[in-house]
Image 1: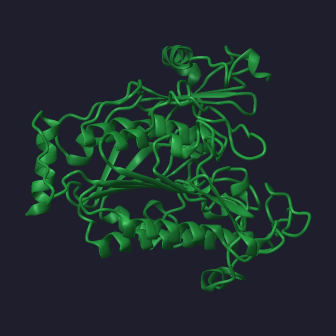
Image 2: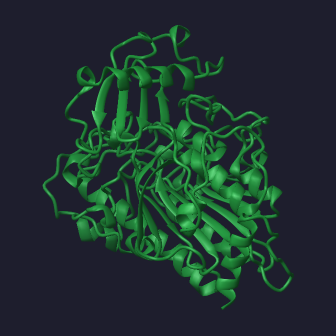
Image 3: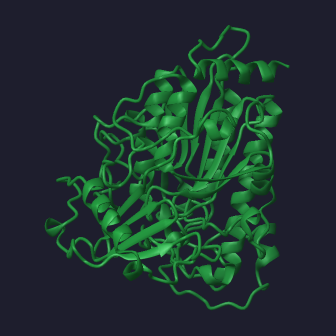
Length: 480
């Protein structure tokens, strides 16, 4: 009864009434956002994975709503996370590429950027992130503590996050040296396990009368392909035919940003996905033990499509789920990702949606959820009508991506149509390939010649959606 009252109060707020709050009853939902690293559309059981079992992620899907046409912010780490946190696509968001800074970190978000964490803080939430940041060095304006997070623990630098037995992690602005790992000489402290324990401890400290936003940008299952010698590893080792990968091994001369060699890369990847699934289960179990599952909105997704680094073999695992492309592609396999929302108080279990959405929809969704205004322009639309099965769900006129590597790429999703332009930075008028995803989800048949009017509309969108920036210039100044 209480849970139905909570959801009824939220719905009342959405149509103009105030959400009823009291010290005894918190009605604002907690939010847990789990962001996997390079997990493909087909790497989870509820979307067809047959080699690796993901029972906990599948449980989340069975108890929530699965979005079957949902997209990441970009096809690589930093711009995808920027789109997620700012509610803007890569033609507008502040960070549009992976740019390493010395001695550690990536190009920082500006202090003028408004993030979802700042939105939640404005609504009175506690905010924390555990995992990989990649949007600004410690002490910079892009530091997670400067972007709305009360607490951060994990890797600040996404390049250093390639090592799963790192020399150090960060607890806010405190450098946590992992002496047992030395300077990458030893493999003793497995960072994903350490970060997971910190996230679980955080949940034990949350206040019962104050909602929280917990962001879990895990490093699993991105390369390097390395796991502890535990029961999970022993389950998969020797199970598959393997092609060993030779990389940069741990030792006195190890590179901080390299990938270790792996004699059993398929087994290692399977073990990493299994470890990710186990950690999702631990988070769900913790919510259960704290008695806060019903009014906690949990989102599970991935930052982009599957990678082919460090010996990974996405074709063997059908990681893209039959879609074309991988990480660094703007074909469906590079940007379409698993996306699940569970909120027992308000979202009916077992639902699916073909609504076309993207990372930049999270900002307006959270804004409507909390009743707080967005601090900057957004490209997104709220998903709450779909989640609550109430009211008319707005639709995107289009989704837009640009990618600043490999000569520059642009893509537009417009209804069932998908337009892609390669080498777009060097040649802004280069031909656009066109696919009808309803008839051709694998993007195998270019029908641009048959639909010149659709191509012309997509060309205009590519021109209008891109706003040039001095920090990440796309066209001639980009050096392509």
